[in-house]
Length: 224
Image 1 (cartoon, one colour):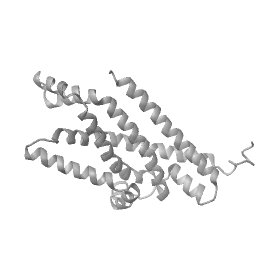
Image 2 (cartoon, one colour):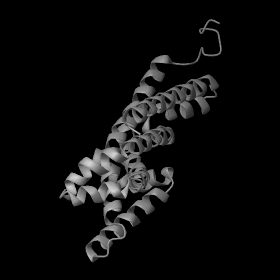
Image 3 (cartoon, rainbow, N blue to C red):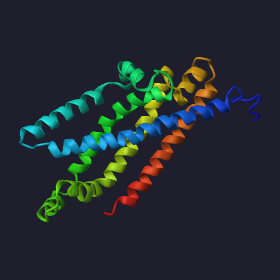
Image 4 (cartoon, one colour):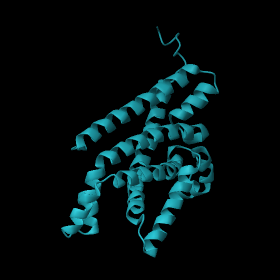
C-alpha cells in the first residue's frame, strides 16, 4: 500500500519522531531520578521499620505517610496539584520538562515500596553475619543489602519504567508533548485514527524494549 494514498497518509512521521523523542526524554530522565529517590526512600523505610527508638519511628512514619499519600493520588490529579511548583522549578507548565516533577513524585513512592520489599526479602542471616564480623551500616548497605536485593531492585525499576511510559502518555494529553499528546491532539481530536494507532504501536515497542532490557539485567545479576 502506498502511504500517500493509504491508511497512514495523514501520519506526520517527523512529528511522530519528535513525539517519540519527547516520550523517551520524559521517561529516561524521570526514571533516573525515581531510581535514586526511590532507592533512598526504600532504604529509609527498611532501616527504620520496627525500630523502637523515637528517631527511627518518627523517620519511618513521616516517610511512610509521604510515600502512601503521593502513591495514592491519581497521576492526572497530581499534575494539576503540582502546577505551581512545576512553574517555579522549570519555568513552564507545558512541554516535556514540565511533566518531570509530577512523573518523579508519582513514581518514586511506588518504587520505594518495591525497594523496601526487596530489602525485606534479603536473608536476615546474611545481615547478622555481616554485623558479627564488625561491618558498619554503610558496609552492610553497600556489600550486603543492595547486592543481595539487586535482582528485585532491577525488576522493580523495570515495572516502574513501564508505568512511567503510561504516565507520559497521560501527561501528553494536558500539554506535556510526547506520544500521548500526538495520539490525543493529532489522532483523536482531528479524527485521524492512523496517528493514534502509530503512537500506540510506538508506545508498545518502548514498553517491550524496557521489559526485555530489564529481564536481561535481572537474569545477569541474579546469582541464585
